[in-house]
Image (cartoon, rainbow over all chains, first blue to last red; front, side, top):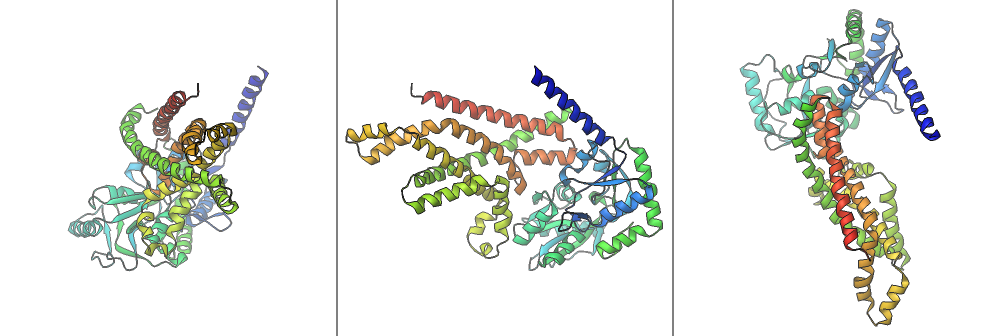
Length: 276
Length: 224
């Protein structure tokens, strides 16, 4: 009986401690740390990247203490809902599907997606416009999607799981393809380089960053994609009942944009101004 | 609790458990061959053969299964030379990479289980066979192997259950097994608890079946 009492006591104590940690007034911001240049880790394991730096800047504008928490991409939204952290800044595009589960702040950066292949692939020559916006639609977009559908037929297409890129590839816009999904973008890059994937889809900067750092001859093909399944820019994900925090983030983003902080940080990490 | 989602995801998860069972059965069969071979090598008096077999089981029992899968899938994929050989036909496919990793892993454990089973056989039984003039070969096939199999059943049952749960790692190399499909459903519904409860229930049911199968075999081949 004594042991039982002790066990119950220790469980209660640990719950109390956990409860206290969760009640702290720091804003905890979740990020993946594996999607350079948006967010990643340096050699010592420290979180770096556009969103990490932007998060600190926004926290200064909100005049709140912040803490950046690492979370695997595929559990990002569930972790937010279960209060492991209070906000997501992880290159997460604002989409209608995600809005059913969480709220988004206004967008702070624009992400365009692109297909990528290894140099020498027969997809290299496909003839499409430079960029297509799926929301705008039109005959150009239809024609481009048809060209891509033909080019992807019978190919193994790889992408990260639970992304807008996966949604697009499953939407039927490019027909039925042999789709493979990976836990991280790093793994997509590795299998693209090894030849297991014929073609991959992700943020264009994710491929150019990989090509630059690894020295592998990854090349972008086809148009850049935006709109439709690709959402409307990247924003801060926040729990639906947390309207106060949503408001604070929106105001901070406004200030950071006005002072040129977002474009300065974006230019530093992307090499071009991806702010919005 | 979203019970509707639980009901809706059940058939999808059940369908995915076919891949889990396929991965399990294929790697268990290959692993059993490897296990037998290495158990016999371990009993060999030649020190080099003995150490080689010991080294294999030491490495594969001493490293996490996840690391083994990653080395075979992502690691070997990085070796450019390998990609120009016929081996790449197999290593290109995540399915076969998973099978290779699972087989080598369970093979290492199985070899240890069988080795210790061989070693627990009482010398008097072998001596009894010899005194009746039975050849060494027949003693091995008709006395040592059946006793070793019976001795190793409880431990091997555990190994099957461990391996069944280990197959969930196949989802890390893009395979859509039970865990892979569960993660996929979560990625669109954002409700991990409901989906993982259903997936966990299916795993538990498979464990239940394996457990009872082993119990049945133990009873059937008991010495009494």
